[in-house]
Image (cartoon, rainbow, N blue to C red):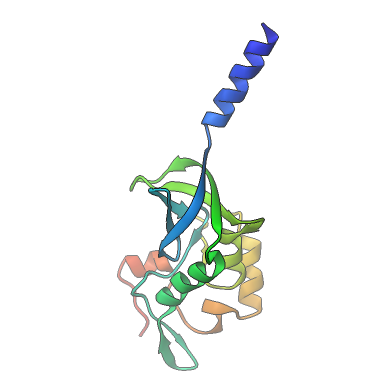
Length: 155
């Protein structure tokens, strides 16, 4: 009886998490697709694909660069994504890894993503480090992606 109960508990716990493994197609800076599962990177927000930022007084395609950064981090490697919930668009919300490297965290550490505090505080410390070191977005002016989606733009 104990074995059956323990086995059932393990099965229930395992079923609560989606573990998706495979080669990824990068949709944008915070969305990938693995094995036909669309995945929203947990706890971060990156500039939108068409979003621009300013650095040294010049406009740069920060949204496109965020997407390219994800492509470089993943390369031809298999990605492992672990999540347990879905957003309103049906995307799995997950932390994704290439080997032991957390892609979500790395994007924030490189300054190409912001900690999405509305949903998680997991990457706030990494964001502070990137800001202090003026990496990525922090090297110039930008509008937070959530504000950009509401229509705010740089002057």
